[in-house]
Length: 338
Image 1 (tube, rainbow, N blue to C red):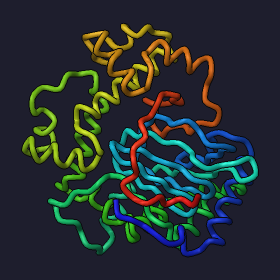
Image 2 (cartoon, one colour; image 1 turned 45 degrees about the vertical axis):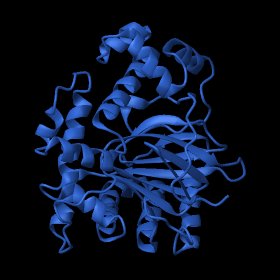
Image 3 (cartoon, rainbow, N blue to C red; image 1 turned 120 degrees about the vertical axis):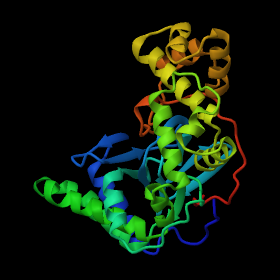
Image 4 (cartoon, one colour; image 1 turned 90 degrees about the horizontal axis):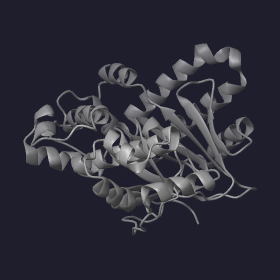
């Protein structure tokens, strides 16, 4: 991640306007769906426990407060006026680090449509990244004034329900266009550049999400991505922060957790359903990820759910995690004010 310093946005007044617009819509803590299907709004009145989740293709924005994201061995703090773009599904641990009742955490997440990105990118006369280029599939950037203005208009549109069907799609297209031509642009264009490593890895990740129960044999994933095994592993880790086997493991364990919570399965049954042949291995790896053995973790979550934990952007990880998360030293200065 490149270091960023200075103000969070070129227009502090507009980020305050975004916070005000979100606060007018969501006046209670939680994750709030809106009449714009791709848009969710988030409010927290205090710091939250770390949450294991999977971020999908989309744009996350903090309007007030601070948040931390742990990706692999890297810890990133970001705050008001900053945006987070994820281009493929990423397993992360995230939590709100600064919020109070008087100044709650306020944020928004906008899911992006890959078809719209492809169409708009094809119409732009922009630099196309070289096919061999690859970078992390998550980036954090200071919001520029024009993109921020579009987001404010999108949130304020919720107060005019009759105009949502006609105007929301236009503003969403404007957001994508501004992302493609702004600081996030190179990363987003890599996703839709035919034959690029990002596109090939994204396809492998999509397959892995649908088939994570299956055992991986040899170089199956690299063959699907049409890469040599060493090149595939290099690009996969560069984009996701973890190895293919670690990625599969996190998908399995998060799904098993949901099965125990939602279908009342015992640990052995849940582990078997997600592809584990050894109950002891399942319990060991589950404890390592969530900080407690399966049954104890699930019992703890049912008895003492986390108030105000951020909900993920992917169905495999709906629950709030109270598991112990190892503290990693940030590889960059905090982007959030303290």
